[in-house]
Amino acid sequence: MKIGNLDIEKKLFLAPMAEVTDSSFRKIVKEHGAGVTFTQMVSAQGVINNNFETLRLLSFSRDEKPIGVQVLGNQPEILGEAVKEIIKLKPDLIDINCGCPVDKVVSNNMGSALLEDSKTIGKIVRKMVDSSNGVPISVKLRLGKDKNNINILETARTAEANGASMLFVHARTRADRYETEPNWEWLKKVKEIVGIPIIGNGSIFTPQDAKDMIDLTGCDSVMVARGALGNPFIFDRFNKLINDGVDPGEPSVETVRDALLKQISYMEKEIGEPICIDKAKKHSIWYFRFYPGLDQLLDKVFSLSNLSSIRSLIEEHTQNILKGNFTNTQLSDINIKFKKKVLFWLTEETMEVIG
Ligand SMILES: Cc1cc2nc3c(=O)[nH]c(=O)nc-3n(C[C@H](O)[C@H](O)[C@H](O)COP(=O)(O)O)c2cc1C
Image (tube, rainbow, N blue to C red):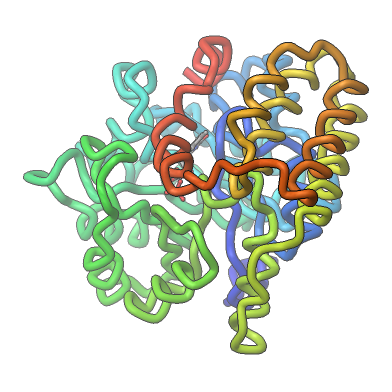
């Protein structure tokens, strides 16, 4: 699949995730075979105002490419101006967020609030395309406002008619937020009516899920969000499943430890130890969520106050898993909790930045 400079074969996309898809995580998933990475959403107004925090969230290095930058906004003029600034950074794709269901975003008529106004989506896309000097513009959509107002066919057609190069379709409505099962039927229908690539999204947690979504809906590729948390391995495993027909399966716990420690080192270099500490704790839990002993890890990790003790705990925890010292096997319960809880880990501070 080729879009502008983007040639992503059939590889997976890392979804934009606030507070998660920073430079360290993007590097790790890229090293593990992701086709395209993404920044988290940044405010278009923040870009124009040269807001320091917004610009920090926008920065990326060559080894995170190909990369998409996602913007949040609702005024075509402002989005056009923001795109003129963003293209100076040479991203491979610029995306407009029409999917975020967070109250603070929706009450400002942004994110998934735009789904109710396809005309405005059209104007926004047109302005962004006209300002992008050839950098492809994509749109991240949900199915509609709620089950009684599904208008994905209209928003998808409008985006394409106004010059969008690709669509990400999260197969849930705004009202569904993250709780219900995604409805893949709609991906199939969208694929039938538009000519641009469609990337499916929603509850892809294993390489086989991603392959099934492609096989059953005909979508061109898949975007993974929660399934990639603590699990950069999903990208390589998917590539092997597609290329060799076999998913090599879960990595060893030593491989998990090594990737986590590497990500923490990238993070430390990027943002320094004090800010890194909380992030390192969050990612440690995500990386070990597939293994017994998660409750013990949760008990210990939050009391730690420096990276050296977090690194020691990671090593100690790995050895305990290897020695079979944990008897907790309730992994399915933990993963149900994980799917629901992950969203509550967004801080108020981030909501301020993105809103
Ligand atoms: C922690 C977190 C942060 C997110 N931040 C963003 C964001 O900045 N922009 C966006 O379009 N979607 C965001 N999302 C939504 C995801 O990109 C994705 O559409 C959604 O989680 C469904 O995919 P999944 O079922 O694979 O998690 C976020 C999701 C999570 C879990």
